[in-house]
Length: 290
Image (cartoon, rainbow, N blue to C red; front, side):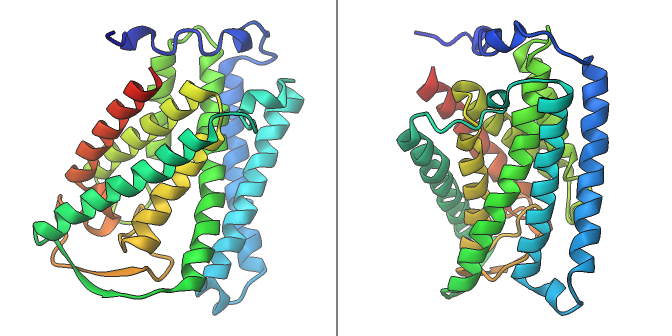
């Protein structure tokens, strides 16, 4: 049976649409933008105030900052969603129910396979070489926690709140998915090494995580996949993660020269190879769930 992409998510938010919105869409979007920048700025100021110069170059500082930002972002969303808009908490998608075996298989297993293939292509093409392989247990465990908190923060903002809010309007779900994915990509504009290719790949990542959420209405699915994506890319395979390099990695790379195969200074997400693999990932995701 062929999948009709135009009606793939047609009935996903029918129940939510029955509840009248307390505020117009433009007001909700304006408030969430203001709340987000206040939360991010406040977390930055507080993290700096609670640390000294030496501490700011440690993994623990990244954990402190990410925890403060995620906490502030989550509280801001709860304020807007539950108190101002008076919507039920369950609409944010944080449900304990679901097919967890499938979520883990796809979110972690498929992501690991994607980076094995991607790293293999980079290595076979001579774009990267392996300098060393060392177990950094502290960095591997600390980075996993940092990336989980970061993934939760971004997913509850972009998929849990923004995508859900857009889908509650008369807007087509695909249009809502495209807009939320574009916002997700734009949030990385200030990252080091950003490029047009990286922005396209980040947009496709937004589509991937958005599809995971729309197929299951469970936010933990894209949170798991998002965390696995960043952790496997950086602390395991040694690529930069969206232009950042915070932890020692299992594999230490020698990047022969930055190019469109290895992604350059932004990491593998700035690679044309990653774009192709991401498109395949999306296609397989649609096939599995529909």
